Length: 80
Image 1 (tube, rainbow, N blue to C red):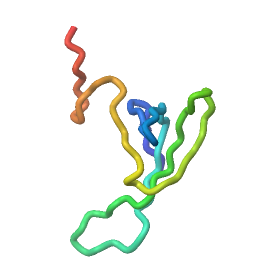
Image 2: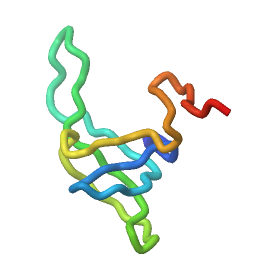
Image 3: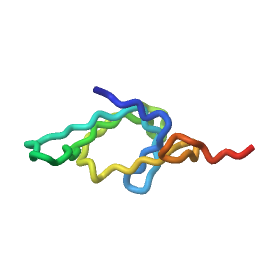
Image 4: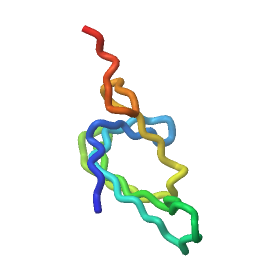
């Protein structure tokens, strides 16, 4: 099931992209008593030319940061 990531930017190879959605692949056997660990991520993003592209790579390769400067709890740092 796709996860909406429009509030995030994706950093790959020191470049920042607007990410639209991701799908996480928890490949491999589940270990009893352990939460599943993501193995691969499929990302849909917009490149420098405005073209929608996809990429699949190992989960450790991806970094995501919030677009609006908000915290992980959903609160923003915009003090107006």
